[in-house]
Image (cartoon, rainbow, N blue to C red; front, side, top):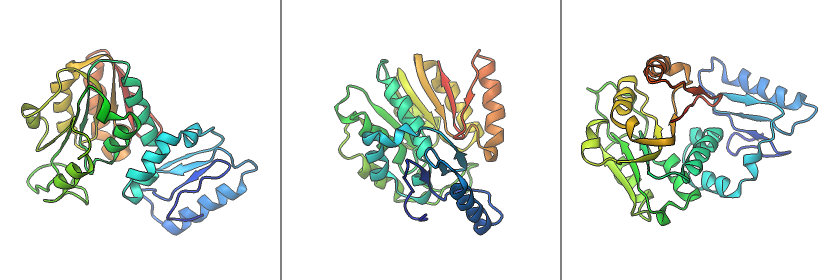
Length: 256
């Protein structure tokens, strides 16, 4: 099974982007042994710290989604996060029956939003997609800087959406950037700031603008590396009568 391309047979999916490993070689050897030991390999999924057995994996037959995922995933981690993209696509598609715009705080390279834009044909929709990120590095700010953050990232993301005039990309710190551009009504919101205080501030500013039945996806909610976000956001939502559904992908889901 290749480290470079996901295995999709039977159908099955294997991509070796697992985090927090003490011994990569030993883990991959055991992963191969697990796959080889199955009497029925159909439904095996492994990637992004998620392993499942005996699932239908029906999304592998979703040509629109899979084509967009292949076309717009740029890194090892993005390819492996397929099931997170499946959840993202489901929420975005479901939000199409509601009024309101789309919104992502922490768009980074714009890969997830670009996949969504493709699968819902966003350029031809009468709504806007608001994307926010710091884009550049700022060592004085308490946020999780990623590899691609730097002076060129904003222009690179702009280039990815050059064919989408209704995608609004705003650089800077959340929630201050909401003063520059922000939706009045939100059908779908994706929160991926890797920072507790920034995400709570974004919720304080924007949750009331999510329309009834609107979808909120919290990318970091179920990851142990971001336990402080789970604790803070769980309390924040409970005070408002909501419970976050923690998904095996590490995401959290709220339907307003």
